[in-house]
Length: 238
Image (cartoon, rainbow, N blue to C red; front, side, top):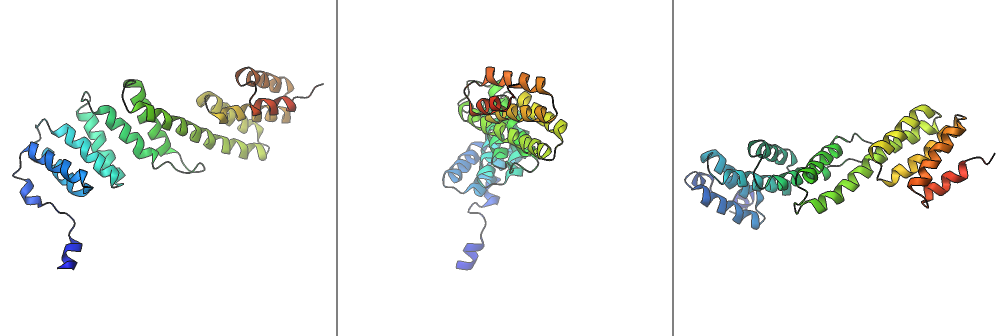
């Protein structure tokens, strides 16, 4: 008996769900979600769309199922259902929440700096869309905090490559990377350091005028920062 109970995957009797009304299914789903039985909650929420595709509860049940999948770290399932929800119900009042959840899903899977940053970019896209389309949403404050982290992460990814090129004396390639950081991620601290590294690269190429010009921009934009101070010391006095 103990073995059988341990092997049981769900507390819900799936067959009984088929005879429930949309409202009853939604209540059942919420009950299991609150008791941290996310897999059981999903069964109830997904039964609504399956048995009652035109019910007013379908949209909300999709979001709730997405939340459950997210909590279970079944990220692919969560993305599928939340993306489907947004496409099917683009004007529904929980679209901001769905965009936030999608951003969080990819944010939680953000790779280390040296790896491909597809998940970082996807998170950036969803959270940026949330902030642009729904600036008064309650999810925006945390979304903006996450956006700052994402931008810094992407800037560091570019910077790592730039430093690799610079150390190997491929200064032209390094300059391209540092300029990308300055143009694409101007609010990050890494952008400030990118100015310094540009100064170094231009000096290494014997391009003193270009180095002075970059340093001037750095001093104007970030006067007093440690990177501005370091850059000033790099410029020859004669």
